[in-house]
Structures are given as structure tokens and as C-alpha cells.
Length: 276
Image (tube, rainbow, N blue to C red; front, side, top):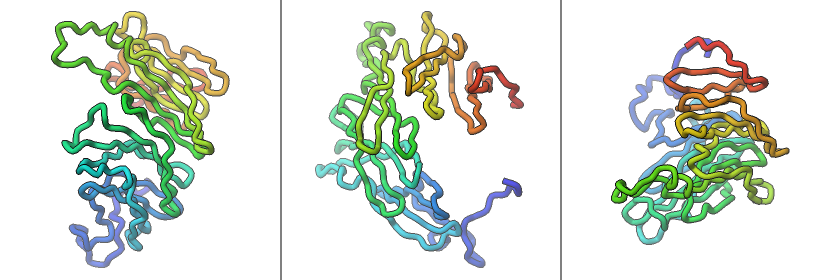
């Protein structure tokens, strides 16, 4: 950061960094993280996702394992991996099976996995019900937090004339769940329908920040849920539609609303000055 320069992770003298002979070359990278002085990269090639490892200078390249290989359908379908998060020497990810047409439908299923970065051992933590989709939100060494909602959360195109937003969204259920990686138990932290709850904005320590709709369904408000006690507190009254929410390491939360970034202290939710 001090030099503000980009450096290619290749120590070869005279290398032009243009092809596979370069130590920094990566085949279709999907995710990258650093652990124990090494780089771990998920690379995709055809229908396979490989977890690879290399030194920080690009040398000592090796393939650790093929991810979710046992779930590749035998009928010629494939898999799709997404939402990678690393914590405590493990990589967590969601994977979906795809049919022979490489499309998602109600028969496809999602799975939540962890893989040990040291030895490549994979553990299937949770099988998402076939009629649900899953969004990975946060992980640490003992817990995984995710949202689960019905797959068909949009009205069918051929029924647009009879579509009534309120009743449709009220029929779509959403749950925020916590998985304990020690025993793979799962509990529901909160649940509601899609008309009242937009989703989980962020996680900070034992606090969840939930995006909820106001009564007019025109503005968002923000609630904080204590995972230990279940106590809920509105921390931001109805505001413009939130486009993005981020929790910073400095104990602050930033949200994008009405094309403007707002910055708040997590302690008292006093709005701080933003310089951009």
C-alpha cells in the first residue's frame, strides 16, 4: 500500500508475464485468498474447479484438490461454484448442480462446503432444500451465516397481467440461518416474507443487520438483531432504497442510498462525514 504500485507475482528474470510460462499465470481464476504465507486460488477449467496453491512469488505451484467433484451429474450436467469465503485456514463455498442444458431449475440443488486449505479435505456442511436458494453471508471458525429463500422469487412472465406484488411477495418466505461447523447443527435466527424483509445486509460479531421495508414498501429501514439474546432494535428509520451496505473493520457501517454513500458508527449510529 505504501508504494501504491501493482507488482506481478513472478520472480523470473526476463519474463514478459504474457503466457503460462510466467509464474504468476492463473487459469480462469474464480477466487483468491492468502493463508500461512501462500496464495490459494480457485481456478476453473471446463467443468472442474481446482483449488491450487503457490508461493507468494508464484513458484511451487500445486493442485490441492478438485472441488465438489463427487456432485458432478453423471448425465452430462455440471456444477457451478460461487460465494467463496475464507476463515481460520478453511475455505467455504456454495456449489450448485446443473442439468444437462446447464440451466438452473427446481430439480437442481445447492450445497454448502468447507475445505481445509492445509490438506484439501472437503466437508459437506449443509444440503440446501431443492426448492430453495441460498446466499452465503458470513463465516468464522465455528459459524456460517446464510439466507435461504424460495427459488421462484420473481413472478412468471406469462402471468404478468394477474401479478399483484404484495400478495406475491408475502407468499415468498425467507430465513436467516446459523450453522455450527462443530456439529453441523442449523438454527433459524430470524424469518419473514419477502414483502417485509429485503434481506440480510451485514454481519458484525454477534449482530445481524437486516434490511426491512417500511409500511409503504417504498423505503428501507435497518434493524440490528443480537444473535445471542434475540433482541431487535431499529438503528435507522425509513430511508431511501439501499443499493449496498458494507461493515468496515473500523467499527463503521456504510450504505449507498439515492446515489450517495452514508457512513455510521456501529456504536450509536451517528452519521459520520464521508469524503467521497
